Image 1 (cartoon, rainbow, N blue to C red):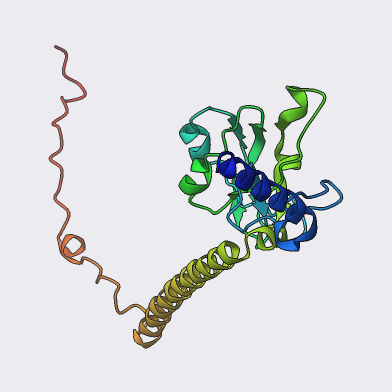
Image 2: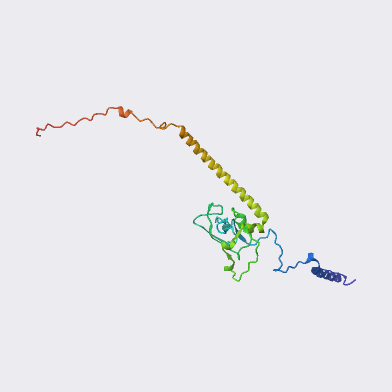
Length: 233
């Protein structure tokens, strides 16, 4: 019958149209921003700096090695390394970034900075609502704006953050064990040296005084003959 295909198409369109309002599984429209779709754990937007503890500046994991700055394809990261060191959250002296800026307007969210960082200091955030009236200055984030806690990292990427914490804890335990072994070895050497000094009699190692030169009779110096006092030349 002529027009059967057209009628079937219109019926399917009408069925989908009605279903989009009645079938809960097909209600794909979300009333944003009042309603939000939960983000997946693998979501990534722009980088942020992880800090441990409660002080965002003292707890920064970043040591200003500048690897991420060198590897960044669009060159949107700018770092100035400190001239001095200050204790991190566990009290270890570390260099720190005196300046750490990221130009979000240039960042391409490639995550290369995360992959090359050897200190697990920079990660990808899930925040995407970053619209600003100032296109340039408003999207240039400094280290104060970039610093976010490890708890935030666990909140947005729980699986990855747990793996990172376990790896860092293992490395820390290994370093502490090595430091303890080195301290014990030094203490053992010092104890052995002290014990050796205690059993050695005083003056046993002193060299006997040389007596050969002292026993010899000093050689007499020949006198120079003097002319007679009454002689006239």
